[in-house]
Length: 488
Image (spheres, rainbow, N blue to C red):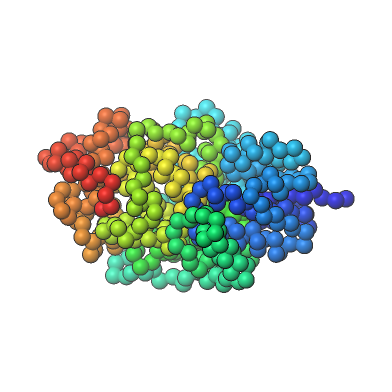
């Protein structure tokens, strides 16, 4: 009996998206996607390389290079539920295409809906405990392993003093091949001959595009880096952008790894004594908890959630930020993080939230534009990833539907959690003057601008009391108004 061909989107490339190992596969490489939006050059390389490597691996894999997806669909196919509303609507309009339930996530949509319906607020911690119980992850019978659900207190250490890097082995290097050479040549030609634009620097491929590469990264992380992950997962070092992070997000979001197997590997490390519970719990929280949570919120919240703007942020992204011009920035933390996006298409979650997102929220940049920037400029960025992450958490544009307070912070936070402030021309303790830290000044300016809107948030009472004690608030607000959209 012939198995129907499975159409795989470029984020569905792993074996868990097939019903049988030998199922025929259709892949589509759509050039029109890159004409419509300006993606990071390394992200474009990653996606095209992953598609072409998937073609080379299979006996009955057909890769169609076309301007649009519709041109490639010439036979009946089945496809797993896509990861964006636009792609789902497109699939639903097609004749001869059977859409299957989603794969590549742990908790099924009906189970999330049953959990979420009727709740006034949706919080990660509540969902995470539900998912741990349902999937029996890090559980000892009916109780969480170790007797508590949350080890955040153990996973928020500042970077160790007196060192510029963590003492952990780097992840195994990626070895490019002839397919990567072909992709790079094609992208060069698209830019030079067809006017297709990219942002960011080209560079050696840093992330997996095959399941073999992804499994090697997963194995190395669990064996050599997971034990050091927990304490410093929120810390930043200028000379160590990777810290002990897994660098698996891009591979998981391409569908090369099943998040279930990632979580199972981490739990086995804890059970065998190879990694401490606190770090394994923190890592599990990111995969089983946060990743699934933002995926489900993307579908559970109404489509207009993407345009939420509770703080009425209307400024457009300045050119220096949109173009990743890190050299225009003097603030050491922001310059280094923006350079990381430019050169790698990746920084870990704290630079994303507390350096990039924090700065954007303080300056009142339009949330939709910020979300789109993250989507296009990060190798692991997709619409479903960034909608709740940026609109809800980073920019607080939903008014608190999925987070308890704005993630606004001044220079004191960055000083505590990084080594950036040493040697910076700005002083994190100063909020006015030539050496006023843009984050410290921006923090107080943000609170002053939104004092009324944040008045009822109990987690903001202490910061607002501090705001009212400032004796230089008028000068500070004027200083930040004059700064405008200039690079700090």
